[in-house]
Length: 196
Image (cartoon, rainbow, N blue to C red):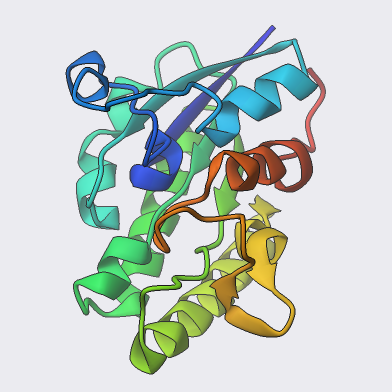
């Protein structure tokens, strides 16, 4: 078994139909555990166990404050975040530095590392789309220079006709993946370049 620590925002929490926090999950009308990419990745590779800390609406600096909740005993760290930095009009360079710092903490703990890029945001405007493109470019550079696995969340769900949007059926609310979208992230985008 390999324990995969996941630190992220509502995308990793499983919004809109799931949340790792039982208190939050109790407020969801019809929770569905398939509304998390980790569930699908675990179905595809039974040797994986996931420990997730992910909170709706959090920026990368806030995600970093919770990192120690998932690191103990982990074999792999997946860092996911950045859309809320874009939504809150924070500098994308700052978000990239926060992601880099979390990965450095995982490296110092001896973990294998992966980082996701940022999904398209159907409810966003041109400014948000440009910020997502810039942040994803910084994430790609970070992954390449640090030897970190890049999980291509953006392109997995992007509409080829308009890459600033998720394809129809892959989001229910324009902000988060649908169950089908989470399935594609877990089955196609998630991969580990490490021995299990």
